Image (cartoon, rainbow over the protein chains, first blue to last red):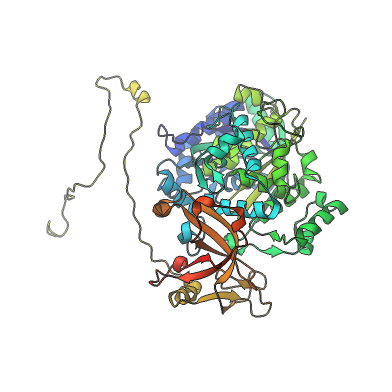
Length: 452
Length: 180
Protein backbone atom coordinates (compact mmCIF):
# COMPACT_ATOMS: atom_id res chain seq x y z
CA UNK A 1 0.00 0.00 0.00
CA UNK A 2 1.23 3.50 -0.86
CA UNK A 3 1.19 6.40 1.63
CA UNK A 4 -2.02 8.43 1.38
CA UNK A 5 -2.27 12.13 2.26
CA UNK A 6 -5.42 14.04 3.22
CA UNK A 7 -4.67 17.45 1.84
CA UNK A 8 -7.81 19.51 1.90
CA UNK A 9 -11.49 19.61 2.77
CA UNK A 10 -14.60 21.70 2.81
CA UNK A 11 -17.85 21.71 4.74
CA UNK A 12 -21.10 23.41 3.79
CA UNK A 13 -22.96 25.17 6.54
CA UNK A 14 -24.95 22.44 8.31
CA UNK A 15 -28.49 23.55 9.11
CA UNK A 16 -31.82 22.02 9.98
CA UNK A 17 -32.93 23.03 6.49
CA UNK A 18 -31.13 24.47 3.48
CA UNK A 19 -34.00 25.20 1.06
CA UNK A 20 -31.71 27.67 -0.73
CA UNK A 21 -29.77 24.84 -2.39
CA UNK A 22 -30.34 21.44 -3.96
CA UNK A 23 -28.06 18.67 -2.70
CA UNK A 24 -25.68 19.02 -5.69
CA UNK A 25 -25.54 22.73 -4.83
CA UNK A 26 -24.53 21.91 -1.25
CA UNK A 27 -21.81 19.52 -2.45
CA UNK A 28 -20.53 22.26 -4.74
CA UNK A 29 -20.11 24.56 -1.70
CA UNK A 30 -18.02 21.96 0.11
CA UNK A 31 -16.00 21.14 -3.03
CA UNK A 32 -15.30 24.77 -3.94
CA UNK A 33 -13.98 25.41 -0.44
CA UNK A 34 -11.67 22.39 -0.60
CA UNK A 35 -10.08 23.33 -3.92
CA UNK A 36 -9.85 27.02 -2.99
CA UNK A 37 -7.97 26.02 0.14
CA UNK A 38 -5.40 24.34 -2.13
CA UNK A 39 -5.19 27.53 -4.16
CA UNK A 40 -6.73 25.89 -7.22
CA UNK A 41 -9.62 26.66 -9.51
CA UNK A 42 -11.97 24.02 -10.86
CA UNK A 43 -10.40 23.65 -14.35
CA UNK A 44 -6.96 23.13 -12.78
CA UNK A 45 -8.21 20.55 -10.28
CA UNK A 46 -10.25 18.78 -12.97
CA UNK A 47 -7.06 18.26 -14.97
CA UNK A 48 -5.46 16.51 -12.00
CA UNK A 49 -8.17 14.56 -10.16
CA UNK A 50 -8.44 10.90 -11.17
CA UNK A 51 -11.90 10.15 -9.79
CA UNK A 52 -14.32 10.45 -6.92
CA UNK A 53 -16.30 8.57 -4.29
CA UNK A 54 -19.83 9.73 -3.44
CA UNK A 55 -21.41 9.28 -0.02
CA UNK A 56 -25.07 9.51 0.95
CA UNK A 57 -27.22 7.34 3.15
CA UNK A 58 -30.84 7.39 2.14
CA UNK A 59 -32.68 7.40 -1.15
CA UNK A 60 -35.87 8.16 0.78
CA UNK A 61 -35.05 11.62 2.08
CA UNK A 62 -34.66 13.20 -1.34
CA UNK A 63 -36.88 10.65 -3.13
CA UNK A 64 -34.10 10.48 -5.67
CA UNK A 65 -32.25 7.38 -6.78
CA UNK A 66 -28.80 7.79 -8.36
CA UNK A 67 -28.27 11.00 -6.41
CA UNK A 68 -24.51 10.38 -6.51
CA UNK A 69 -24.28 10.90 -10.24
CA UNK A 70 -26.26 14.13 -9.94
CA UNK A 71 -23.60 15.52 -7.60
CA UNK A 72 -20.82 14.15 -9.85
CA UNK A 73 -22.49 15.80 -12.84
CA UNK A 74 -23.08 19.14 -11.10
CA UNK A 75 -19.46 19.30 -9.92
CA UNK A 76 -18.35 18.82 -13.52
CA UNK A 77 -16.57 15.55 -12.66
CA UNK A 78 -18.08 13.51 -15.52
CA UNK A 79 -16.77 11.33 -17.18
CA UNK A 80 -14.25 10.47 -14.44
CA UNK A 81 -14.71 7.21 -12.48
CA UNK A 82 -16.92 7.29 -9.40
CA UNK A 83 -19.15 5.14 -7.24
CA UNK A 84 -21.53 5.69 -4.39
CA UNK A 85 -21.04 4.10 -0.98
CA UNK A 86 -23.70 3.54 1.67
CA UNK A 87 -23.38 2.22 5.18
CA UNK A 88 -25.89 4.04 7.38
CA UNK A 89 -24.39 6.59 9.74
CA UNK A 90 -20.89 5.41 8.81
CA UNK A 91 -21.40 6.27 5.15
CA UNK A 92 -19.04 9.27 5.30
CA UNK A 93 -16.36 7.29 7.13
CA UNK A 94 -16.65 4.48 4.59
CA UNK A 95 -16.37 7.03 1.77
CA UNK A 96 -13.14 8.39 3.27
CA UNK A 97 -11.73 4.87 3.50
CA UNK A 98 -12.81 3.97 -0.05
CA UNK A 99 -10.97 7.09 -1.23
CA UNK A 100 -7.98 5.92 0.80
CA UNK A 101 -8.14 2.51 -0.88
CA UNK A 102 -8.29 4.07 -4.35
CA UNK A 103 -5.08 5.98 -3.64
CA UNK A 104 -3.27 3.40 -1.51
CA UNK A 105 -3.83 0.70 -4.13
CA UNK A 106 -2.37 2.82 -6.91
CA UNK A 107 -5.69 3.09 -8.76
CA UNK A 108 -5.75 6.87 -8.35
CA UNK A 109 -3.20 9.55 -7.50
CA UNK A 110 -5.83 12.11 -6.53
CA UNK A 111 -9.30 11.18 -5.30
CA UNK A 112 -12.12 13.50 -4.31
CA UNK A 113 -14.50 12.19 -1.62
CA UNK A 114 -17.80 14.02 -1.26
CA UNK A 115 -20.85 13.33 0.85
CA UNK A 116 -24.22 14.90 1.50
CA UNK A 117 -27.66 14.41 2.96
CA UNK A 118 -30.79 16.50 2.49
CA UNK A 119 -33.00 15.51 5.43
CA UNK A 120 -35.27 18.55 5.63
CA UNK A 121 -37.55 17.50 2.80
CA UNK A 122 -39.61 15.45 5.25
CA UNK A 123 -40.90 16.32 8.71
CA UNK A 124 -38.79 15.15 11.67
CA UNK A 125 -41.16 12.29 12.60
CA UNK A 126 -41.12 11.01 9.01
CA UNK A 127 -37.32 11.31 9.05
CA UNK A 128 -37.29 9.23 12.24
CA UNK A 129 -39.32 6.64 10.37
CA UNK A 130 -36.88 6.55 7.44
CA UNK A 131 -33.94 6.19 9.82
CA UNK A 132 -35.76 3.44 11.71
CA UNK A 133 -36.01 1.54 8.43
CA UNK A 134 -32.30 0.99 9.07
CA UNK A 135 -33.41 -1.58 11.65
CA UNK A 136 -34.87 -5.01 10.84
CA UNK A 137 -38.26 -4.25 9.28
CA UNK A 138 -39.64 -7.65 10.27
CA UNK A 139 -38.67 -7.62 13.94
CA UNK A 140 -37.44 -4.19 15.09
CA UNK A 141 -39.24 -1.48 13.18
CA UNK A 142 -42.82 -2.75 13.76
CA UNK A 143 -42.34 -2.87 17.54
CA UNK A 144 -41.86 0.88 17.69
CA UNK A 145 -38.99 1.66 15.39
CA UNK A 146 -37.18 4.73 16.67
CA UNK A 147 -33.42 5.04 16.80
CA UNK A 148 -33.34 7.18 19.94
CA UNK A 149 -35.33 4.38 21.57
CA UNK A 150 -32.77 1.77 20.54
CA UNK A 151 -29.92 3.87 21.92
CA UNK A 152 -31.82 4.61 25.11
CA UNK A 153 -32.13 0.84 25.73
CA UNK A 154 -28.35 0.62 25.49
CA UNK A 155 -28.12 3.42 28.06
CA UNK A 156 -30.34 1.69 30.60
CA UNK A 157 -28.21 -1.44 30.27
CA UNK A 158 -25.00 0.63 30.59
CA UNK A 159 -26.45 2.22 33.74
CA UNK A 160 -27.42 -1.15 35.21
CA UNK A 161 -24.16 -2.83 34.26
CA UNK A 162 -21.69 -0.09 35.25
CA UNK A 163 -23.55 2.49 37.34
CA UNK A 164 -23.31 5.14 34.62
CA UNK A 165 -25.38 8.23 35.51
CA UNK A 166 -27.46 10.66 33.46
CA UNK A 167 -25.27 13.49 34.80
CA UNK A 168 -22.23 11.79 33.28
CA UNK A 169 -24.07 11.66 29.94
CA UNK A 170 -24.88 15.36 30.33
CA UNK A 171 -21.17 16.19 30.68
CA UNK A 172 -20.76 15.12 27.04
CA UNK A 173 -23.60 17.39 25.97
CA UNK A 174 -22.18 20.38 27.86
CA UNK A 175 -18.70 19.77 26.43
CA UNK A 176 -19.79 19.38 22.82
CA UNK A 177 -22.25 22.30 22.81
CA UNK A 178 -19.69 24.64 24.41
CA UNK A 179 -16.93 23.50 22.04
CA UNK A 180 -19.30 24.30 19.18
CA UNK A 181 -19.55 27.85 20.49
CA UNK A 182 -16.20 28.40 18.77
CA UNK A 183 -17.06 26.53 15.54
CA UNK A 184 -18.93 28.60 12.94
CA UNK A 185 -19.87 25.42 11.06
CA UNK A 186 -21.85 24.11 14.04
CA UNK A 187 -25.55 24.82 14.32
CA UNK A 188 -26.14 24.31 18.06
CA UNK A 189 -23.66 26.69 19.68
CA UNK A 190 -24.93 26.70 23.22
CA UNK A 191 -23.63 27.26 26.74
CA UNK A 192 -25.55 24.57 28.57
CA UNK A 193 -25.34 23.32 32.13
CA UNK A 194 -25.90 19.77 33.37
CA UNK A 195 -29.28 20.98 34.68
CA UNK A 196 -30.24 22.40 31.25
CA UNK A 197 -29.53 19.04 29.61
CA UNK A 198 -31.62 17.11 32.12
CA UNK A 199 -34.47 19.66 32.07
CA UNK A 200 -34.82 19.49 28.27
CA UNK A 201 -37.82 17.56 26.88
CA UNK A 202 -37.47 13.80 27.30
CA UNK A 203 -37.18 11.96 23.98
CA UNK A 204 -36.46 8.37 25.01
CA UNK A 205 -35.76 7.86 28.70
CA UNK A 206 -33.18 8.79 29.88
CA UNK A 207 -32.08 10.68 26.73
CA UNK A 208 -33.30 14.27 26.45
CA UNK A 209 -33.29 16.52 23.42
CA UNK A 210 -29.82 17.79 24.40
CA UNK A 211 -28.45 14.24 24.43
CA UNK A 212 -29.29 13.71 20.75
CA UNK A 213 -27.97 15.09 17.45
CA UNK A 214 -30.30 16.71 14.93
CA UNK A 215 -31.16 15.70 11.39
CA UNK A 216 -29.67 18.26 9.04
CA UNK A 217 -28.94 19.34 5.50
CA UNK A 218 -25.28 19.50 4.63
CA UNK A 219 -22.32 18.38 2.55
CA UNK A 220 -18.61 17.82 3.05
CA UNK A 221 -15.65 16.91 0.87
CA UNK A 222 -12.05 15.82 1.28
CA UNK A 223 -9.20 15.42 -1.19
CA UNK A 224 -6.87 12.44 -0.78
CA UNK A 225 -3.71 11.84 -2.77
CA UNK A 226 -0.53 9.83 -3.16
CA UNK A 227 2.97 11.30 -3.01
CA UNK A 228 2.80 11.73 -6.80
CA UNK A 229 -0.61 13.35 -6.46
CA UNK A 230 0.72 15.71 -3.82
CA UNK A 231 3.55 16.75 -6.15
CA UNK A 232 1.04 17.43 -8.93
CA UNK A 233 -1.17 19.53 -6.66
CA UNK A 234 1.81 21.49 -5.34
CA UNK A 235 3.07 22.12 -8.86
CA UNK A 236 -0.34 23.41 -9.96
CA UNK A 237 -0.90 25.60 -6.93
CA UNK A 238 2.70 26.75 -6.56
CA UNK A 239 2.63 26.27 -2.80
CA UNK A 240 3.67 23.68 -0.27
CA UNK A 241 0.78 21.67 1.13
CA UNK A 242 1.04 20.59 4.81
CA UNK A 243 1.54 16.82 5.11
CA UNK A 244 -1.31 15.02 6.86
CA UNK A 245 -0.96 11.30 6.24
CA UNK A 246 -3.69 8.72 6.77
CA UNK A 247 -1.59 6.29 8.76
CA UNK A 248 -4.16 3.60 9.44
CA UNK A 249 -7.72 2.58 8.75
CA UNK A 250 -9.92 0.01 10.45
CA UNK A 251 -13.48 -1.18 10.12
CA UNK A 252 -15.72 -3.49 12.11
CA UNK A 253 -19.27 -4.83 11.92
CA UNK A 254 -21.91 -6.34 14.16
CA UNK A 255 -25.33 -7.97 14.00
CA UNK A 256 -28.11 -5.77 12.62
CA UNK A 257 -30.45 -6.53 15.49
CA UNK A 258 -29.38 -5.38 18.95
CA UNK A 259 -31.17 -8.46 20.27
CA UNK A 260 -28.75 -10.76 18.39
CA UNK A 261 -25.52 -9.29 19.81
CA UNK A 262 -23.40 -12.05 21.33
CA UNK A 263 -22.57 -12.40 25.01
CA UNK A 264 -18.94 -13.51 24.78
CA UNK A 265 -16.80 -14.96 27.53
CA UNK A 266 -13.81 -13.32 29.19
CA UNK A 267 -11.51 -15.71 27.31
CA UNK A 268 -13.01 -14.84 23.92
CA UNK A 269 -12.82 -11.13 24.71
CA UNK A 270 -9.09 -11.46 25.30
CA UNK A 271 -8.67 -13.69 22.28
CA UNK A 272 -10.49 -11.47 19.80
CA UNK A 273 -11.28 -8.00 21.12
CA UNK A 274 -8.81 -6.72 23.71
CA UNK A 275 -6.54 -3.78 22.85
CA UNK A 276 -2.80 -3.70 23.65
CA UNK A 277 -3.44 -1.33 26.57
CA UNK A 278 -5.77 -3.91 28.15
CA UNK A 279 -3.44 -6.87 28.39
CA UNK A 280 -1.66 -5.84 31.60
CA UNK A 281 -2.36 -7.69 34.85
CA UNK A 282 -4.39 -4.82 36.30
CA UNK A 283 -6.75 -4.70 33.31
CA UNK A 284 -7.10 -8.48 33.26
CA UNK A 285 -8.05 -8.44 36.94
CA UNK A 286 -10.51 -5.59 36.30
CA UNK A 287 -12.21 -7.45 33.46
CA UNK A 288 -12.19 -10.75 35.35
CA UNK A 289 -14.16 -8.98 38.07
CA UNK A 290 -16.63 -7.53 35.55
CA UNK A 291 -17.28 -10.98 34.12
CA UNK A 292 -17.79 -12.35 37.62
CA UNK A 293 -20.63 -9.86 38.04
CA UNK A 294 -22.43 -10.94 34.90
CA UNK A 295 -20.80 -8.69 32.27
CA UNK A 296 -20.87 -10.24 28.80
CA UNK A 297 -19.33 -8.81 25.64
CA UNK A 298 -20.48 -6.90 23.67
CA UNK A 299 -24.07 -7.27 24.85
CA UNK A 300 -26.20 -4.25 24.08
CA UNK A 301 -24.02 -1.83 26.06
CA UNK A 302 -20.90 -1.98 23.89
CA UNK A 303 -20.05 -1.71 20.20
CA UNK A 304 -17.93 -4.62 19.07
CA UNK A 305 -17.79 -3.04 15.59
CA UNK A 306 -16.24 0.11 17.07
CA UNK A 307 -13.75 -1.94 19.02
CA UNK A 308 -12.70 -4.00 15.99
CA UNK A 309 -12.44 -0.89 13.80
CA UNK A 310 -10.23 0.74 16.46
CA UNK A 311 -8.12 -2.38 16.91
CA UNK A 312 -7.40 -2.66 13.19
CA UNK A 313 -6.69 1.07 12.77
CA UNK A 314 -4.39 1.09 15.82
CA UNK A 315 -2.49 -1.93 14.52
CA UNK A 316 -1.98 -0.20 11.17
CA UNK A 317 -0.92 3.08 12.79
CA UNK A 318 1.14 1.30 15.49
CA UNK A 319 -0.81 2.77 18.39
CA UNK A 320 -0.66 0.83 21.66
CA UNK A 321 -1.83 3.46 24.18
CA UNK A 322 -4.62 5.41 22.44
CA UNK A 323 -5.36 7.89 25.24
CA UNK A 324 -1.77 9.13 25.28
CA UNK A 325 -0.78 8.53 21.66
CA UNK A 326 -3.75 10.25 19.99
CA UNK A 327 -4.00 14.03 20.41
CA UNK A 328 -7.73 14.34 19.67
CA UNK A 329 -10.67 12.28 18.45
CA UNK A 330 -13.64 13.29 16.32
CA UNK A 331 -16.12 10.50 17.05
CA UNK A 332 -19.69 9.72 16.14
CA UNK A 333 -21.66 11.22 19.05
CA UNK A 334 -25.14 10.82 17.61
CA UNK A 335 -26.03 10.46 21.31
CA UNK A 336 -24.13 11.52 24.43
CA UNK A 337 -24.37 7.89 25.45
CA UNK A 338 -22.76 6.65 22.26
CA UNK A 339 -19.83 8.99 22.87
CA UNK A 340 -19.40 7.33 26.27
CA UNK A 341 -19.73 3.85 24.76
CA UNK A 342 -17.18 4.82 22.11
CA UNK A 343 -14.60 6.01 24.66
CA UNK A 344 -14.60 2.40 25.81
CA UNK A 345 -14.58 0.84 22.33
CA UNK A 346 -11.64 3.05 21.31
CA UNK A 347 -9.74 2.16 24.45
CA UNK A 348 -9.59 5.70 25.85
CA UNK A 349 -10.75 3.98 29.02
CA UNK A 350 -11.79 0.42 29.90
CA UNK A 351 -15.28 -0.98 29.35
CA UNK A 352 -17.44 0.22 32.20
CA UNK A 353 -15.37 3.36 32.84
CA UNK A 354 -16.93 5.52 30.13
CA UNK A 355 -19.23 7.40 32.50
CA UNK A 356 -16.51 8.45 34.91
CA UNK A 357 -14.17 9.19 31.98
CA UNK A 358 -16.82 11.56 30.54
CA UNK A 359 -16.98 13.53 33.77
CA UNK A 360 -13.22 13.40 34.45
CA UNK A 361 -12.22 16.24 32.14
CA UNK A 362 -9.77 14.11 30.13
CA UNK A 363 -11.83 14.48 26.94
CA UNK A 364 -12.37 18.24 27.28
CA UNK A 365 -10.49 21.00 25.46
CA UNK A 366 -7.82 22.90 27.36
CA UNK A 367 -8.40 26.61 27.81
CA UNK A 368 -12.19 26.56 27.52
CA UNK A 369 -14.45 27.34 30.47
CA UNK A 370 -17.18 24.72 30.67
CA UNK A 371 -18.62 25.93 33.97
CA UNK A 372 -17.92 22.48 35.41
CA UNK A 373 -15.65 21.26 38.14
CA UNK A 374 -13.53 18.72 36.32
CA UNK A 375 -11.16 16.66 38.46
CA UNK A 376 -8.57 16.01 35.74
CA UNK A 377 -6.77 17.99 33.05
CA UNK A 378 -7.52 17.40 29.37
CA UNK A 379 -5.47 14.58 27.82
CA UNK A 380 -7.21 13.72 24.56
CA UNK A 381 -9.98 16.15 23.57
CA UNK A 382 -12.95 14.33 22.07
CA UNK A 383 -15.11 16.14 19.54
CA UNK A 384 -13.36 19.49 19.75
CA UNK A 385 -15.59 20.57 16.84
CA UNK A 386 -18.75 19.99 18.88
CA UNK A 387 -19.37 16.67 17.17
CA UNK A 388 -22.65 15.52 15.71
CA UNK A 389 -24.54 16.75 18.77
CA UNK A 390 -23.72 20.37 18.04
CA UNK A 391 -22.80 20.36 14.34
CA UNK A 392 -25.69 18.16 13.20
CA UNK A 393 -25.78 14.86 11.36
CA UNK A 394 -26.49 15.10 7.62
CA UNK A 395 -25.64 11.42 7.40
CA UNK A 396 -23.61 11.08 4.20
CA UNK A 397 -21.63 14.22 5.00
CA UNK A 398 -20.92 13.56 8.67
CA UNK A 399 -17.94 11.20 8.46
CA UNK A 400 -16.30 13.49 5.91
CA UNK A 401 -16.99 16.54 8.08
CA UNK A 402 -15.01 14.81 10.83
CA UNK A 403 -12.17 14.22 8.36
CA UNK A 404 -12.16 17.89 7.34
CA UNK A 405 -12.01 19.10 10.95
CA UNK A 406 -9.23 16.57 11.65
CA UNK A 407 -7.23 17.76 8.61
CA UNK A 408 -7.50 21.36 9.81
CA UNK A 409 -6.50 20.42 13.37
CA UNK A 410 -3.41 18.63 12.03
CA UNK A 411 -2.55 21.40 9.57
CA UNK A 412 -2.83 23.77 12.57
CA UNK A 413 -5.25 25.90 10.53
CA UNK A 414 -8.32 25.86 12.79
CA UNK A 415 -8.05 29.62 13.36
CA UNK A 416 -7.95 30.26 9.62
CA UNK A 417 -11.07 28.19 8.96
CA UNK A 418 -13.08 28.92 12.13
CA UNK A 419 -11.95 32.51 12.64
CA UNK A 420 -11.22 31.48 16.24
CA UNK A 421 -8.23 29.57 17.60
CA UNK A 422 -10.00 28.25 20.72
CA UNK A 423 -10.57 24.80 19.20
CA UNK A 424 -7.05 24.32 17.89
CA UNK A 425 -5.70 21.32 19.80
CA UNK A 426 -2.23 22.51 20.88
CA UNK A 427 0.54 20.91 18.85
CA UNK A 428 -1.83 18.33 17.34
CA UNK A 429 0.20 15.59 15.67
CA UNK A 430 -2.15 12.63 15.50
CA UNK A 431 -5.95 12.46 15.39
CA UNK A 432 -8.57 9.75 15.04
CA UNK A 433 -11.91 9.95 13.25
CA UNK A 434 -14.68 7.47 14.01
CA UNK A 435 -17.84 6.98 11.94
CA UNK A 436 -20.64 4.72 13.15
CA UNK A 437 -23.78 3.20 11.64
CA UNK A 438 -27.03 1.74 12.87
CA UNK A 439 -27.00 0.43 16.41
CA UNK A 440 -23.28 -0.25 15.91
CA UNK A 441 -23.40 -2.26 12.70
CA UNK A 442 -20.66 -0.68 10.61
CA UNK A 443 -17.94 1.38 12.29
CA UNK A 444 -14.89 2.94 10.66
CA UNK A 445 -11.85 4.35 12.44
CA UNK A 446 -9.16 6.26 10.56
CA UNK A 447 -5.94 7.69 11.96
CA UNK A 448 -4.45 10.90 10.53
CA UNK A 449 -0.97 12.17 11.33
CA UNK A 450 0.90 15.37 10.71
CA UNK A 451 4.28 14.98 9.00
CA UNK A 452 6.76 17.83 9.02
CA UNK B 1 -54.67 4.26 -36.54
CA UNK B 2 -57.50 6.21 -34.91
CA UNK B 3 -57.19 9.17 -32.53
CA UNK B 4 -59.07 7.09 -29.95
CA UNK B 5 -56.39 4.40 -29.84
CA UNK B 6 -53.45 6.79 -29.54
CA UNK B 7 -54.77 10.20 -28.43
CA UNK B 8 -52.46 13.06 -29.30
CA UNK B 9 -53.41 15.05 -26.21
CA UNK B 10 -52.67 14.33 -22.57
CA UNK B 11 -55.78 14.48 -20.47
CA UNK B 12 -55.84 17.39 -18.02
CA UNK B 13 -56.32 16.55 -14.35
CA UNK B 14 -56.61 18.65 -11.21
CA UNK B 15 -53.65 16.91 -9.57
CA UNK B 16 -50.53 18.90 -8.93
CA UNK B 17 -48.91 21.20 -6.47
CA UNK B 18 -50.59 23.97 -4.54
CA UNK B 19 -48.63 27.10 -5.36
CA UNK B 20 -48.36 29.48 -2.45
CA UNK B 21 -46.35 32.15 -4.23
CA UNK B 22 -44.37 32.51 -7.41
CA UNK B 23 -42.09 35.50 -7.14
CA UNK B 24 -40.56 36.83 -10.34
CA UNK B 25 -39.03 40.18 -11.27
CA UNK B 26 -41.20 42.41 -13.42
CA UNK B 27 -38.33 44.13 -15.24
CA UNK B 28 -35.71 42.88 -17.70
CA UNK B 29 -32.96 42.54 -15.11
CA UNK B 30 -32.79 38.80 -14.39
CA UNK B 31 -29.69 39.10 -12.21
CA UNK B 32 -31.99 39.74 -9.23
CA UNK B 33 -33.14 36.10 -9.56
CA UNK B 34 -29.99 35.15 -7.64
CA UNK B 35 -31.64 36.73 -4.60
CA UNK B 36 -34.91 34.82 -5.09
CA UNK B 37 -36.29 32.69 -2.26
CA UNK B 38 -36.42 28.95 -3.00
CA UNK B 39 -39.71 27.50 -4.19
CA UNK B 40 -40.89 24.63 -2.00
CA UNK B 41 -43.71 22.32 -3.06
CA UNK B 42 -45.63 19.45 -1.49
CA UNK B 43 -44.73 16.10 -3.04
CA UNK B 44 -46.80 13.17 -1.66
CA UNK B 45 -45.42 9.63 -1.92
CA UNK B 46 -47.22 6.47 -0.82
CA UNK B 47 -46.12 2.85 -1.15
CA UNK B 48 -47.71 -0.51 -0.30
CA UNK B 49 -45.17 -3.30 0.02
CA UNK B 50 -45.90 -7.02 -0.35
CA UNK B 51 -43.51 -8.03 2.43
CA UNK B 52 -42.63 -11.72 2.87
CA UNK B 53 -41.32 -12.99 6.21
CA UNK B 54 -39.58 -15.76 4.24
CA UNK B 55 -37.95 -18.41 6.42
CA UNK B 56 -39.07 -16.52 9.53
CA UNK B 57 -42.78 -17.02 8.66
CA UNK B 58 -43.41 -19.86 11.17
CA UNK B 59 -42.68 -17.46 14.02
CA UNK B 60 -45.61 -15.28 13.02
CA UNK B 61 -47.85 -18.30 12.48
CA UNK B 62 -46.95 -19.41 16.02
CA UNK B 63 -47.82 -15.99 17.50
CA UNK B 64 -51.15 -16.07 15.66
CA UNK B 65 -51.77 -19.39 17.46
CA UNK B 66 -50.61 -17.99 20.82
CA UNK B 67 -47.36 -19.94 20.83
CA UNK B 68 -43.79 -18.68 21.10
CA UNK B 69 -41.04 -20.39 19.12
CA UNK B 70 -37.33 -19.70 18.97
CA UNK B 71 -34.47 -20.93 16.77
CA UNK B 72 -31.84 -23.43 18.03
CA UNK B 73 -28.65 -24.66 16.43
CA UNK B 74 -29.19 -28.44 16.57
CA UNK B 75 -25.67 -29.42 17.64
CA UNK B 76 -24.37 -26.58 19.81
CA UNK B 77 -27.76 -25.65 21.25
CA UNK B 78 -27.10 -21.91 20.70
CA UNK B 79 -30.57 -20.42 20.78
CA UNK B 80 -31.91 -17.21 19.24
CA UNK B 81 -34.92 -15.52 20.82
CA UNK B 82 -35.48 -13.55 17.62
CA UNK B 83 -35.86 -15.89 14.63
CA UNK B 84 -32.75 -16.64 12.61
CA UNK B 85 -32.74 -19.33 9.93
CA UNK B 86 -29.02 -20.06 10.13
CA UNK B 87 -26.63 -20.00 13.05
CA UNK B 88 -23.97 -17.25 12.92
CA UNK B 89 -21.21 -19.53 14.24
CA UNK B 90 -21.68 -22.92 12.57
CA UNK B 91 -23.53 -21.64 9.52
CA UNK B 92 -25.99 -24.49 9.96
CA UNK B 93 -29.74 -24.28 9.63
CA UNK B 94 -31.52 -23.77 12.96
CA UNK B 95 -34.55 -25.70 14.16
CA UNK B 96 -37.72 -24.35 15.75
CA UNK B 97 -38.20 -24.93 19.47
CA UNK B 98 -41.15 -23.82 21.57
CA UNK B 99 -40.54 -21.94 24.84
CA UNK B 100 -42.77 -20.20 27.36
CA UNK B 101 -42.71 -16.43 26.84
CA UNK B 102 -41.51 -15.77 30.37
CA UNK B 103 -38.31 -13.93 31.10
CA UNK B 104 -36.67 -10.81 32.49
CA UNK B 105 -36.20 -7.24 31.29
CA UNK B 106 -32.61 -6.92 29.99
CA UNK B 107 -32.86 -3.27 28.86
CA UNK B 108 -35.69 -0.82 28.26
CA UNK B 109 -36.68 2.73 27.38
CA UNK B 110 -39.78 4.90 27.38
CA UNK B 111 -40.30 6.56 24.00
CA UNK B 112 -41.85 10.01 24.43
CA UNK B 113 -41.34 10.74 20.76
CA UNK B 114 -40.97 8.47 17.75
CA UNK B 115 -41.45 7.74 14.12
CA UNK B 116 -44.58 9.09 12.48
CA UNK B 117 -46.25 5.67 12.54
CA UNK B 118 -45.91 5.34 16.32
CA UNK B 119 -46.40 8.95 17.45
CA UNK B 120 -50.03 8.36 18.52
CA UNK B 121 -48.81 5.61 20.89
CA UNK B 122 -46.30 7.78 22.80
CA UNK B 123 -45.29 7.31 25.54
CA UNK B 124 -44.66 3.61 24.99
CA UNK B 125 -42.13 1.27 26.57
CA UNK B 126 -39.64 -0.74 24.51
CA UNK B 127 -37.83 -3.60 26.18
CA UNK B 128 -35.32 -6.30 25.31
CA UNK B 129 -36.31 -9.53 27.04
CA UNK B 130 -33.94 -12.32 28.10
CA UNK B 131 -35.18 -15.89 28.50
CA UNK B 132 -33.48 -18.60 30.53
CA UNK B 133 -31.57 -21.01 28.32
CA UNK B 134 -31.77 -18.66 25.35
CA UNK B 135 -28.62 -16.87 24.16
CA UNK B 136 -30.08 -13.78 22.50
CA UNK B 137 -32.82 -11.26 23.28
CA UNK B 138 -36.28 -10.33 22.00
CA UNK B 139 -37.44 -6.77 21.34
CA UNK B 140 -40.97 -6.10 22.52
CA UNK B 141 -43.43 -3.65 24.04
CA UNK B 142 -43.69 -3.67 27.83
CA UNK B 143 -47.05 -2.68 29.35
CA UNK B 144 -48.34 -2.46 32.92
CA UNK B 145 -45.62 -0.05 34.12
CA UNK B 146 -45.93 3.71 34.64
CA UNK B 147 -44.07 5.35 31.74
CA UNK B 148 -43.61 8.51 33.82
CA UNK B 149 -41.84 6.60 36.59
CA UNK B 150 -39.07 4.95 34.54
CA UNK B 151 -36.33 3.51 36.70
CA UNK B 152 -33.17 1.45 36.16
CA UNK B 153 -34.80 -0.91 38.69
CA UNK B 154 -37.02 -2.16 35.88
CA UNK B 155 -34.00 -4.09 34.62
CA UNK B 156 -34.26 -7.64 35.89
CA UNK B 157 -38.04 -7.39 36.30
CA UNK B 158 -39.77 -10.73 35.67
CA UNK B 159 -42.20 -10.48 32.77
CA UNK B 160 -44.66 -12.69 30.92
CA UNK B 161 -45.87 -12.58 27.34
CA UNK B 162 -49.48 -12.05 26.35
CA UNK B 163 -50.87 -12.46 22.84
CA UNK B 164 -53.20 -10.28 20.85
CA UNK B 165 -56.49 -12.10 20.30
CA UNK B 166 -56.65 -10.77 16.77
CA UNK B 167 -53.27 -11.43 15.21
CA UNK B 168 -51.85 -8.68 13.03
CA UNK B 169 -48.97 -10.87 11.84
CA UNK B 170 -46.42 -8.55 13.43
CA UNK B 171 -43.88 -9.12 16.22
CA UNK B 172 -46.24 -7.06 18.41
CA UNK B 173 -48.71 -9.96 18.35
CA UNK B 174 -46.93 -10.79 21.60
CA UNK B 175 -46.18 -8.18 24.26
CA UNK B 176 -44.95 -8.44 27.83
CA UNK B 177 -46.20 -7.35 31.25
CA UNK B 178 -44.81 -7.60 34.82
CA UNK B 179 -45.20 -11.13 36.18
CA UNK B 180 -45.27 -10.09 39.84
